[in-house]
Length: 117
Image 1 (tube, rainbow, N blue to C red):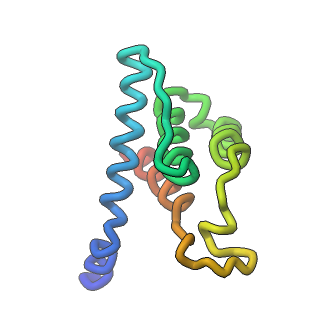
Image 2 (cartoon, rainbow, N blue to C red; image 1 turned 180 degrees about the vertical axis):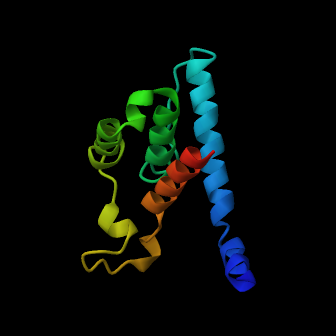
């Protein structure tokens, strides 16, 4: 449906996904090709940081592309570092809807995009 595609374009969803993948690829290149150490910290550290860090790890290390590795990277980059799942998805009676953001959905979309390409 043409209207649906137009609505998707208005959200800039694909641009966000592209930027996340580009940033993750750059980090993976620094680590793999230049043998550099990197520090990833985006603004408040709750949203972009785990997205980019986890994606870069999945690009660099095939372990993180296994089911067990996926579990480890979610625990390590999202759960252990205190990602605000309930706040970002406005679950559990969160009254601050302005803090809601599809951060995990964006990350999952990035993974899907990596698997498809």
